[in-house]
Length: 196
Ligand code: GTP
Ligand code: MG
Image 1 (cartoon, rainbow, N blue to C red):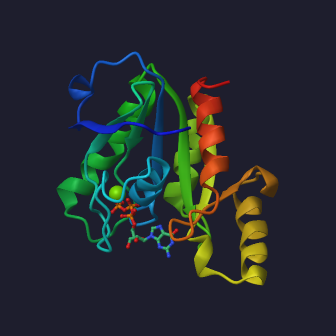
Image 2 (spheres, protein in one colour):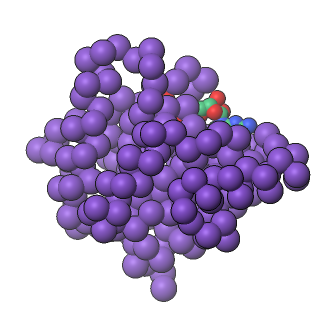
Image 3 (spheres, helix red, strand yellow):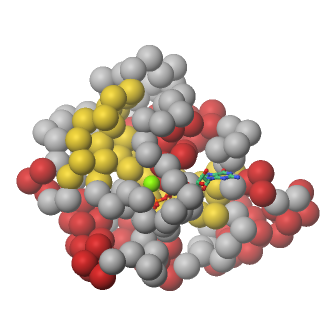
């Protein structure tokens, strides 16, 4: 996608706060600090459309962004951050579950995993929800730049086994080198049903 316009629409916690929109929507999910916001910024060619941070738990609401008036990208709050205030952690699950269950124009979820880590219980739970609601998952392995060639191959096999997917169906990505950006865009467009 040739991004000519990317704008923040709004933040929401409850379903009644979601923007009214008929555009196809793709959401980005993953554990806290995995690199969700960084991936969205790279996709839309903007350094700081979405706030990123080295402190986990930065994104605590559902953030909606419109791209070229054709597609909406949604940055979901990250899970699994042990130090988040209890009231934030308690809200997370119903907030995400409601979004996944109720958002009619949701066409797919990009689930972002850290190439260096074994998928967490939260990751597996998220995959379970996506399966249960028949929401297509695009699985991205981020921070690709942080590993050597050998380590990448080992982790790719390990993660594919843990989540029971073909390793060729996973999308490597680095926010540092932008490796994987084009492939991820193509898959996002395909799931959103645009430009095809
Ligand atoms: P929360 O909103 O807090 O859940 O985090 P997030 O998943 O949105 O992560 P964010 O994009 O804010 O990135 C977290 C940290 O990881 C930042 O310091 C990023 O610069 C760094 N980071 C993200 N992606 C990559 C990557 O591909 N490579 C490297 N080396 N660092 C990355
Ligand atoms: Mg974030």
